[in-house]
Length: 272
Image (cartoon, rainbow, N blue to C red; front, side, top):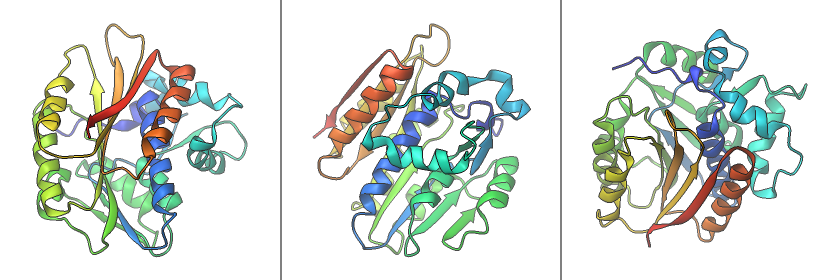
């Protein structure tokens, strides 16, 4: 299935959580001069216009980025994310929202590399148009699940893999732990950031159980829950092999976001 287009959901609470944590994680990687590779298995577009007809259809950004954009108390841990947003929107109106490829490109240094994977034809064209001119970016029309099993490790010893499928295909809840395990076998030194939705059907429970019993060590989990009886009830992130002490940064970001746009949050080690 290739129906999912993220433009309809851009800037929602999922994006705020995912991109704030991604920016913080890449900023930690930048503290070491050695080069690294950022791999995005389900890239989507690089940039979203929140005034587009697609984004205006559901207006999910109104309970996400639009709400926190007005706040003045952004903590230091979330400043890398805020800086990217501010540079995109110098008029302070927050019309343009970055996808994960743009967040990464904004933080990577000349010695670092981006590998972006996308198979949706329309999303791929937008990604190539928005990100194709950057020197350290390589874009592939390839299924992201194959990347984890067949295209790791990269040349760089250090790096981060973001895995955030749409889950429109229910089998992706099963594929996620299976393919991430395959990736870790190929590249055990890499960091892996995994997103999952929290819905009424609670399919994420099985996903978490698979990771909990997988034998993979050092899995940090954070969730933000929202008031919603019908659709998205929360958003979760797993980080495998996070930097030392990163759980404190995750907690501060998650608590601040929850106070602004969520109902409750929890950060813990799924596996230590």
